[in-house]
Length: 166
Image 1 (cartoon, rainbow, N blue to C red):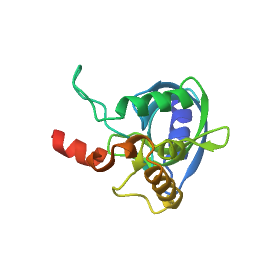
Image 2 (image 1 turned 60 degrees about the horizontal axis):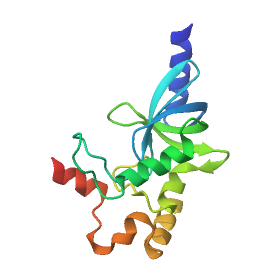
Image 3 (image 1 turned 30 degrees about the vertical axis):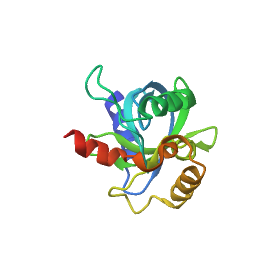
Image 4 (image 1 turned 180 degrees about the horizontal axis):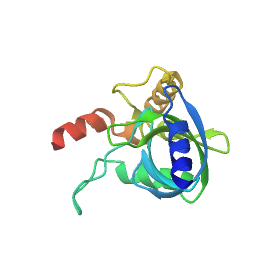
């Protein structure tokens, strides 16, 4: 019975289009765009779709990307220990749920961009996902120099940061 329930919840999260998965309690926040949650008798890992937060260091004691700690703390403050709704858009290559996270109706992915602690994801994106509000929020954060945008021309995107570290 538990296997059937796990399958049904995962199926809801990764339908070809989108699906409202229901409520999950956030039990761990890894960084500014990834977390672990529990609900419906399963544990899932989620990657916030549409955003790319500064990268934390892969090596203990090594510095991460500027604003990586702030992004993780901000996301942790928004959702850790809370029950969130997740709207799924499929799986990424690491089998994490790609999702928009809502807390009391507020789009947390968008809040990260508004705070200047994530940029709009520039990689391949599902057609069902609307980037327009994210692009608008990023432009406002850039103009007002919030978070990552406060460093001006020395800012490096998380994508470029990852590429340099390889």
